[in-house]
Length: 141
Image (tube, rainbow, N blue to C red; front, side, top):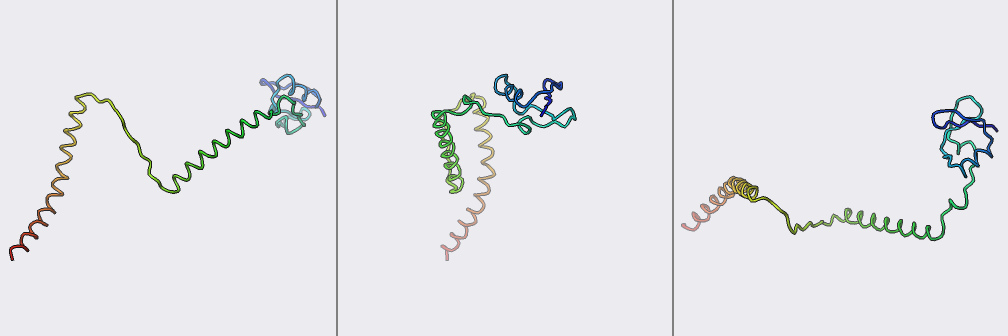
């Protein structure tokens, strides 16, 4: 079968299956390079049209398989830990040990907090004074 490839914005060929297999194995041609049977212009990935043998050097060694297995095991353990935390709704705590804030910003921050506390104090004072009045009126009888 004669094939044409589309590489570097141009059509090249014709090539035989064997020539293209050698180009993938030795010359660095990508298996995903567009190729066409004949010059009809219907382009597909090269690895869909021909069988590309895997070189022995491309196969993973036993040590790399072990390393990959260790990495995948670590990833799986981390995912399990994260999903079990979210499933159990356990709370996550954040402890702030130190932060730097300019003095003027700190003064403004304290003033804003003081002003924000005034409505809260009023909201608490009204029900407390009503409750105190009820208790005192019951005690006088």
